[in-house]
Length: 441
Figure 1 (cartoon, rainbow, N blue to C red):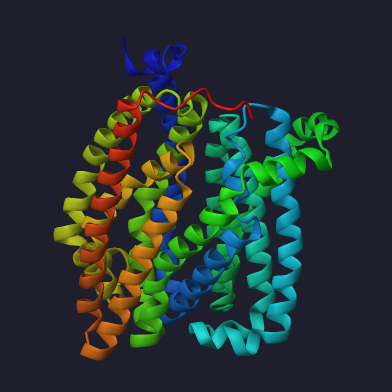
Figure 2 (figure 1 turned 90 degrees about the horizontal axis):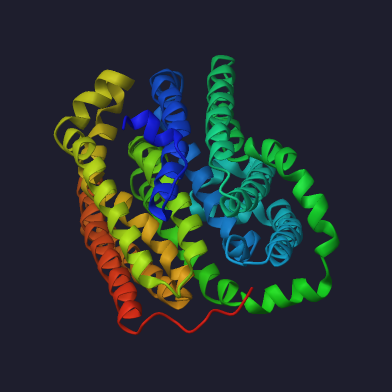
């Protein structure tokens, strides 16, 4: 049977359904990333390393605030078997986002000139309102994407990826040509985080109207208590995760200045393309399927997990090898000679990115097996390691290249450890015969 015919026929197994979802998301990602790859050389010639440094700091701040907005209840939206309870989790997430955004808005308006320079973001003091808009739209997009994941709306998510990219890149190029630097990059980043809000809301509005009658304070309080492990464990875990991801850019800006931080920012942006393309698609499809399977069937989860790990690792080998040996030359050719350092950084980071690419979907299993505290412990370990690296690099006078190499080695060890430990969790669940019958939620 041909590949096309195989893709067209109805999926007969959970694995087929998961990989079809992955392929659908990946197709949208391919188109979106093709647009990004085509436009990045243009954008990199319009904006300089210092502009990218401001963008890196802005994106870091938005991503660090984002987990707080919903107290991570948003992650639980795909989990309840009852549609009514899932909708109440969604509404709870929206209510929390609204209340916390007001607090953040007042904080930025009153204390922004004091707080922002503390994270090397003094250039954003006059644009504090853009930080607020960015986190609100990113929060709404995250909520709606989680609802789409619950309903396996892979085609819708794939289309959103394409429209988001076209609009965001158009904003960056258009405003950059008008001389609005680095504001064009910041608005483009904001658009990239928010364009799907309108399309998702329009698509799911009939579902929201039908479920509105199932909304009640009693159910809201029930889901808030039932999933209380998310604010207790997942919120600090997610904050530490985002901090540890964004910290290298903030630390680089502090140690070596915004231009070097911009070089690292471009390297991380280009390395993130395969992660966002296949890794994120796999993660969303993987989470949708293992959430349906439930923790009472760990053997099936193990089977799906092994398949996903093998496919992701094999798929990431060739790009990793190319970047490892040819990244400086490729970056100089594609973006101009001034981005040669970004290519050096990309080559150094490529090995750890391969391991992040394969292990990222596995983190979802901590949700399935209700191991939120493990996620917290893992991120405490990573945060301590990265903060220690910053302190040691500052004291020892590391060059930027030495700092990035040390960071890459730390992440290699970390992601190897994460993957091994999560496999141990699933294996223990299989040996114990799974959990007792799950409580119907």
